[in-house]
Length: 291
Image (tube, rainbow, N blue to C red; front, side, top):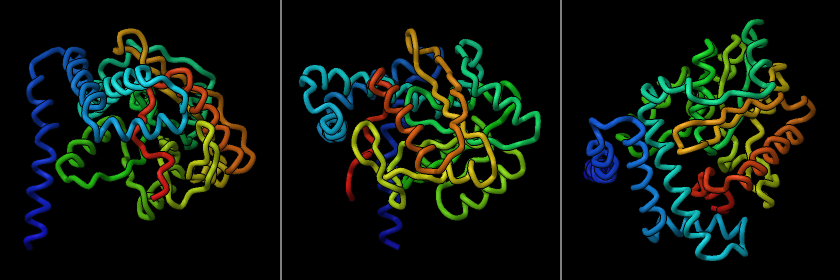
């Protein structure tokens, strides 16, 4: 009883900073609120030791020779982009109304339209890069609502708010785990689209090169694509200009071969994009942390 009460109080306390930051910005235009929230998160990541150390650890893994001044600037810029991305997800219904200002390209979009017309499912793979919700926003606007796989949050207040935001981007929203996997299989077999972020560490995954270092990686997306003969389409929403527009690219479907080769193909694709725009990847995933 005492433990549950303590956890409830602690969840409230940890949620207060986010709630306060979102509440202060109410009444302003969407882009102004997004920039303000991004600036706040950028300040936290740049100057708060706990947040900065998490980013430093990942950056030193990939860029060991990066000058300290450049590293700190990247911490700040990544934090700004991360803050804007989080704000847009938490206000996803409003964010979706702005899809018309994005640039959309790539052969993968035609492949998805063909699959949809044929009543066939599809798997869209991406990572914590740019704004991944811009991908689902683009598809939903074209009549191809796309569900998503997500990792539930421990804090129940943050979980409720985040889930509502993700759900506004498209249904169904499926939690990681056995129950979510069963629902995922039903969805794609019935002709549904699903988006999966493949750059998180999966304890049951396989160690594969990512940004030049072995990282535990899930093979589930490729395995499902092969088993049910579905297109596996890499897609990315790169933040451009002043940060209010996105270049949404749907790459050609990864050629079917085996799950290791297909997943490595995606890892190499995302790695190249991160090297080109390192401030747009979420460097706090503890991608190479052993425990």
